[in-house]
Image (cartoon, rainbow over all chains, first blue to last red; front, top):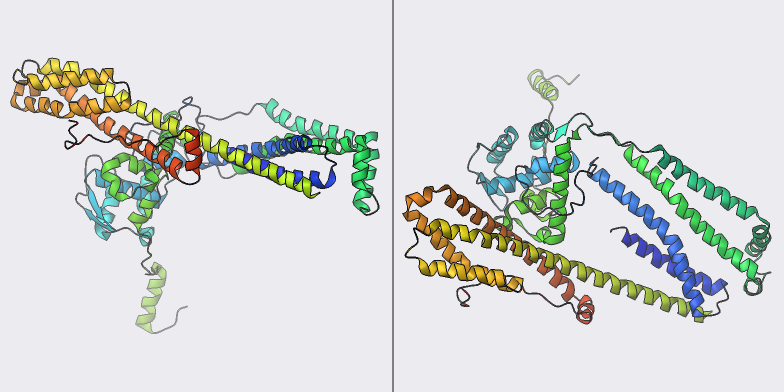
Length: 371
Length: 182
C-alpha cells in the first residue's frame, strides 16, 4: 500500500496546480465545474505516476530481497511461530543473499546469550562456553574472538572478516542455497510487444489528432497568445470560443493519457536497468524460497503486531527469539548501537603490510633508505 | 480572480482534510482489526489448553485421589473458558487454571510410574508449550494494544478517534493474587 502515498501527494499537487490555472485562465461558471476539473486533472495526472511509483518500489523491494520469486506460498502475509532451526545468519542470507556483519553479529550475540554461551553487560562480553553441540565452526570462531576481545565495537569489523567468510560458506553450501538457478522466469513475448505497441499507437494517435484541422486552427490561436500575450484577450476568447476551450482541455487530457500509457514502458525500462546489476553468486533452492517467505511473514508480523523496534537488549529474556529476529530482519536498530557501542574509541588502527615491515626492519638494521 | 483562488484554496483544504480523515479512519480500523485478530490468536491457544485438560485429568485420576478440590477447580475453570463470552472472560478463567495445573504436575513428582508415563509426559510437554505460546501471543497482543492506544490518544488524532468511536483498550494482564482473581 505504499503507492498510496505518492498517489495522495501527486493528487494534492495536481489539485493545487490546476485550480490556480483554472482560476486564472478559464471562465468558471460555477463551483461544480471547478471541482470536476480538479478531480479529473488530479486523477489523470496522479494515476500514471502512482502506478510507476508502485512498480518501481516493488522492483526495488524485490531487488532488496534479491531475486526471491515469492510464488511458493500463496497469501502468506504473516508468520507467527518461531523460525525453528534457522540461525540468524541463515535468516540474513535467505533475506538478501549476503551477510551484514554488524546486524548479523548482533543477532548472534543475542542468540548466544539466550543459549547461555555468553553474557553481555553494557558493552562488555563474558563468554562462558566456547563450544557446544549446536554450534557451527563459524560460531566457535566468533565466540573465541568475543572471548579474546571481551567487547564489540566498530573497530573490530576487520577482525570479523574471516568469520564472515566462514559463515557465508557454511550457509551457502547448505540446503537452502545452490550455485545454479533452479527456476528461470520467462517473460511472455506478447507482454513485451504489448508494452511497446500500446504507447506507440497512443503516440501515433496523439500526433494525428494534433495535426488535425481542429487542433491546428485552435493551436494557432494558442501559439499567438503564448507569443503575444498582451495583444490577445485570452479569457474573452476562451469564453466565446467553446471549440477552442474544449480543444485545449482535450490536449491536456490526451497529454495525461499519453503519460498514463507511457508509464508502463518507462517502468519496464527502469526495472530492466535495476535488473542489470550483477547476477547473484548463489540462488535459493525451492526450500530456501519457501523459508524466505516464512521469514518475510515473520518480518511483517513483527512490523505490524509489535513494538519490537523500540525494545532494547534488556527485553531479551521477555521476547527471546523474536527480538533476535527483529534485529536480523532490520526491525530494530537500537540494539545494534547497544551491542556495537555508539561511541567510537578514537583509536586508529594502522595496518602495516609484511613487505613494508621487512623494509622498515632492513632500514633499521642497515641505516640505508628504502629503495 | 481572487474569488476563484479562494475557491480553489478552500477546495484544496477540504480535500486535504477529507484525505486526513479517511486515512485516520482507515489506520484506526486496521490497528483495531490487528488487535482483535491477535486477541483471537490468544483464544485459539486458550482453547488448545482447554482441550488438553480432560486427558490430563484422566491420566492423573488414579494418583490424585486426595486432590479432588484441585481437579474441581480445573474442571470449573475449563467450563468457564468454554462458556466465556469474550477474551477477557476466558483470560480470567484461564488464570485460575495455572496454579492447579502446577499442583497436578507436582503430584507426578511423588509417583515414579506417572512420571515415566509417556502419555503424561507428552501432555506435560504440550501444556508447557501451550503456556509459552499463550505468553508470547499475549505479549504481541499487548503490543498491538499499545500501538492502537498510542495512535488514538495523540493529538490531533484523539479528536477524530473520539468522534469516530474508537476507544482506548486495556492491556491483558496477569491476574494478581492481591486482587483476588485467582
